[in-house]
Length: 467
Ligand SMILES: *[C@@H]1O[C@H](CO)[C@@H](O)[C@H](O)[C@H]1NC(C)=O
Ligand SMILES: *[C@@H]1O[C@H](CO)[C@@H](O)[C@H](O)[C@H]1NC(C)=O
Ligand SMILES: *[C@@H]1O[C@H](CO)[C@@H](O)[C@H](O)[C@H]1NC(C)=O
Ligand SMILES: *[C@@H]1O[C@H](CO)[C@@H](O)[C@H](O)[C@H]1NC(C)=O
Ligand SMILES: [Fe+2]
Image 1 (cartoon, rainbow, N blue to C red):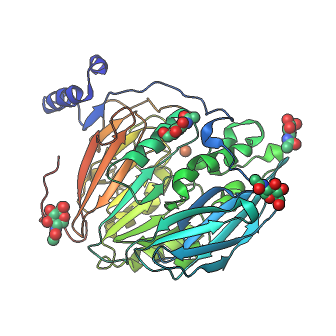
Image 2: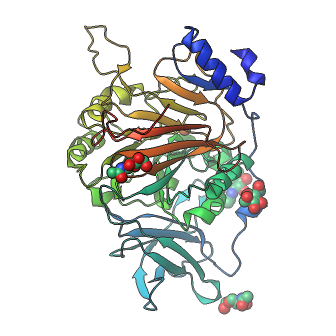
């Protein structure tokens, strides 16, 4: 396949199709549009890391969903010099009545770094589908932002999610975020697939790189919720620095509404948003039988009411199906524990990051195996989710180029380019997924797929042409 590298992607795809049909390979398409290898983190004096003007001005502002059904929002920000105020002033666009909500602030130390004052304030009982303005900070350093609440959950509510993973803070990261913002499909909420700042790659896990990352993504994350998933770069476990509490910086900085889904940990939880039920799992917390995460997921899956939220989406950092040699088989232990549930409950799609590349699977499962029967090959399974890896945000570790050859039959499309995804729910039967690579124009999709809902449209009876 090496001869294909010099050709443009559409020719490559066409040739792959011909070669595959002649039995040259088992799987789907391997896009050979390979980006340059490595881009360093943006320097500290970059425009995207600029501190907002004004004494003790709120910075690193970000929001996420604040309850189970989308009428709550958690607003978080950091004041660098003193606590200041944890109050949020907010009002609906159509009203002059200003409401107050009182938050809290936390701090943490990591080796010799001390964080700023990290504020978290939940505002709730908001109207659905309404634009709200909010204001934080005091004195001459107040700042205003806005967000739009989702529509009330319902089976045919259209909604558009963005998918970003493993972003980091390089120039490529900035290009990925710019492409997401400029995409004409206009994502309304980001499903973030883990590995945020990559600050643990610096000496002493330099936590000031958590701060630069927070300032970098503020331009989007202050205006639309980012739904957080923890990755391995969030663990920050450093016994050599006597830092032995996993996830310390992450869990202080990124609050999530885990209690409203009866979870006991911010590392796994669920939310409803429009017509989607989103379950966030932790690849780096115990998940075997009898663990807290296992019991929570076992009790959570039967609660999903597909007549209210037809689209069942699972997020986790480490993919269960990947044909890249980077992190090869790392998801295997979780697959063994949870895959049969994903099939039983007809999960529509599992999104992951971790591998710095893009890959989309066919609907397959590998759940027949027991240690005696030898049935250990993935088979086509129309009750199985599609597995999509989008760990291609553009961080400083560079692209994962090591695709295993030949492409296995479960793999429908894979490519080592940076980019982002859009999951665009149309109604209870159809959702359209597009993957956008950074080298292309904002409107171009390098890979796309029509999802037929596993509960309402499992046989594609309500058909929209797909390939
Ligand atoms: C990041 O992207 C934004 C939007 O495209 C641009 O204005 C800014 O100059 C970029 N910054 C860097 C350091 O690349
Ligand atoms: C933390 O320690 C390192 C190494 O000793 C030093 O370079 C750095 O300036 C220290 N940072 C702070 C905030 O004290
Ligand atoms: C903002 O307020 C602080 C404290 O009251 C004051 O020292 C500073 O001069 C003010 N800055 C501006 C730009 O007004
Ligand atoms: C659902 O959306 C698909 C894709 O846009 C469309 O073809 C189909 O007609 C819609 N179904 C209904 C009942 O509107
Ligand atoms: Fe990762």
